[in-house]
Image (cartoon, rainbow, N blue to C red; front, side, top):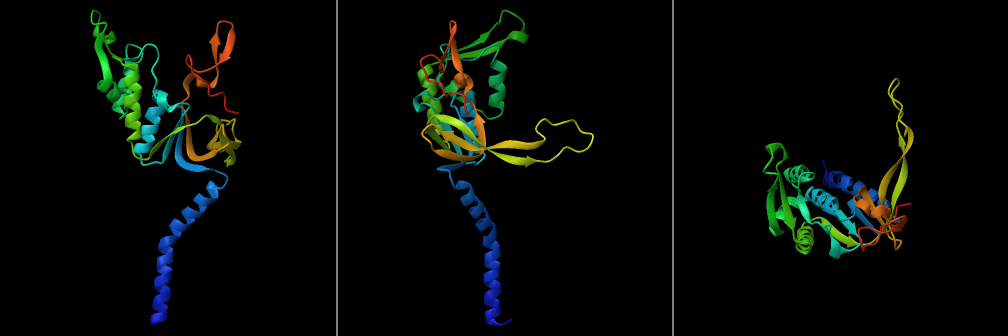
Length: 234
């Protein structure tokens, strides 16, 4: 093979190695058109569920964003700042077994630890921890901010951006799918200030913040007491 032919063959080999990256980069650029930022996973709401979802995604090396109305109130606990108990103790243990951080943060800042119902049978024994409300949210924020691949954003999410994608027809004889034909897929979120954020997955963990808070006979828009509501997306 001549030197010229060798040179062309070498260039072709290098192009073949770069082609997958070029294709991925091209489609990523196309996806970003019309969006201000791009993430693999976007979580809306920074309560208990949102914090766990954000950590799980970031630990999987996914570029993750956690959106909250107020970064100073991440993982804000209720008027009874308890973790565990008869109703929720099993859930906390399951979260902990799956690598969650609620139990770890509670261990770090708990002010009282008790085993409930010890006067009864073992079936209803339940560990419960009382937490310092302020210390809990400060510690949770510290843990989140130290996690690679995770960014915390303060903004109000106004809507979920979707696109319609074709959905394959069901095989003959299979149950009828109510979504057969077309199905919408989340591709990002729209912020109240007009910015658009692209995402390959959108996780909604807003809790009670999507609708009004009943107050006597009137429904007043809001989240937990004294905090704003995120409103119901589109």
